[in-house]
Image (cartoon, helix red, strand yellow):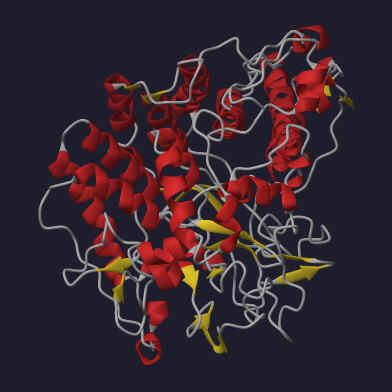
Length: 569
């Protein structure tokens, strides 16, 4: 058992209805005693945190892995194309219907989260100012509100914003998903985070609560998305890269913000993906979902969001579903040349050959590869059998490592068909802050500064080899070096972002943000068809497949207030 915050759903003294667009809309009124009872109010805030765990599941993970299968990082996996067929449609960008359950499901889950958060904000606003934590708790709740809107906006682009915390049913019914431009929508999210940044403390005793640095990191991320303007209502193309927004990214990635809270890079890259309590909430973790086990809640607070990714190892994890499998394209991206640098322009010219080529050590810390140990357990050697590919090779034989744990470690827990762990899910980590800053610097022409930040990650990668002891016996040839000049800075930053954050569900959204999704994904489909035949009929359509359609159920219930995304859905 470990210390946690986001755990038990406290019984609340308001009732809720499940009607407005399937949203959990609070209807009750707090009594005078309840309004000014700090314990009662804090319980409502804890309930708002808790829904970000209780409302997700293996098919709708707030990590977004289910929706990152659209990227060149990963295959859907499973036993066949029909196993999770609606996600297969996403991975080939074909046949997606507005009535598909997965299009509506994430919408409903996240708006339920927003409903719970707004109920807490409303309760806090009703308190008098004698409650010394009132502003801090408001900052926490507005941080959560920004986070939910952020996830929704990356998925659907045109969304209704529920910024007013005490909306009536009639006001909900009047909401429009096109009331704000794309840029204005990002600013609404930033406004909530700006408030949070101004009132949150430098550190928190409860690790699940965001800090000032957590808000800064999310502000940097929001302003980076906002900088790549997509405000043409007839397209999803990037029409401008706004320098003022990039300046905001630099403002909120200033190192002093993070060092004040004790944040920084882990000495070893792999420490971010370990289940042991001594590694959780490490200095690189700026904000993480807190999971637990053996806490008297019938395993309900385990991390089930990754439950479909476990491979079905005979006699060990019999029944693992083997989803979200690293692509050969991703593996190839980790190849390095004689200088220890990546092949940015032609990394996919050939498939990586471990016996004869060198690679960045982050490859073996991210991807399980045939001929090497699974989760660093030398008794579980991967091979090209159904143990490591439930689809018998349809989706290749690579397995994701960052989300899984050694099944013999005691941290893997089975319940019915799924597997869970107590391992946290880091929402934003310090390496991402460095990469966001590097990207803003490169876009502003400050290439030398950008490359210095990239090199900090490459130098850390070179030292991240403790878990790979003995891998040379299996043929691993590790080589990674920093850059020695400042040329091609933006391309290098983008490549480093892919390598560092691989399989952390950032890749597809990065491609859309950069305006590169059509070019990169269609090239990927063509090249990858030889390794994964599901892509023979795949095609990414620009100004359509960048975002999910607005769910049919939501449009039908909106009384004409919602407009479908462009693309001929």
